[in-house]
Image (tube, rainbow, N blue to C red):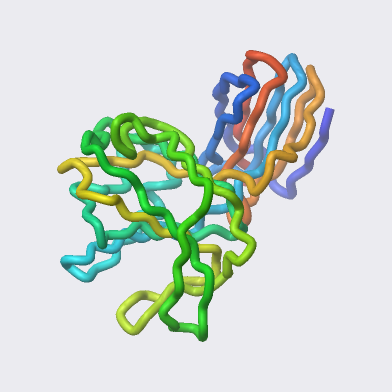
Length: 249
C-alpha cells in the first residue's frame, strides 16, 4: 500500500466510483480537495492530465474575450462553456502547461445539431510578448464528438502531437496577456446551433505510456492543480475503480 503524509490533519473526504475498460477514460480532479486514494481489484493504468490553465472565448462580432476557465474545470454540470451560435471567426482558445494529444469534451444538455466540423490549430510561432501568433492546423485529427456534426455528443478530439508547438503568451494590442502555455484554438466551419453548452474539458496526456498500477493495491497521492487537471485511466478488463478524495487543513 502506498503511503502519503500531509502537514495538516484530514478535514474532509468524499468518494465516487469510475468504470474502467481497456479504452481510456478521463476523471477531472475534484475541486477543494488536495489528495486522492485509488483502488481497483484488477490491474489498471494511469496518466496525469496536464493542467488546462486558460479557456477564452473570442466573439469576433463583438471583439471581446470571455474567460470560461472555471466553467470548463469545476466538474459542475450547472455551469457551462457557452458556444451558443458560435460562428466561423469565433474561437475558443485553450492553454495547457504541457503539450497534449487532444481534449476530452463533456457536453451539456444542449448539443450542436448543425452539420459542421471543427477547425483546430496550435500556436506554431511567436515573436515577443505581445506578438501576433502564427497558427497551424493540427494533423491526423479525429473528432469523437462528431455525430452528424461536431460537438453533438461527449467524446475525445485527438491529433498528432506537433513537433513545432510553441509555448507562448497569447496577446495582441487588444487581447489580454496570459502566462506562457501551449495554445490551441478552434472554430466551427459553419455556425453552431443557437444553444451549445460544454460542461467540462480534460486534456489528453501526450502519449500512451501510462503508469502500471497493481491489482488490489491502494494508491494515495497528493494533487497538484498547478501542473495537472485530472487523470487518464485504463483498465485491464471491465472493472470498477474506487476513488476517495481527501482534504487536509
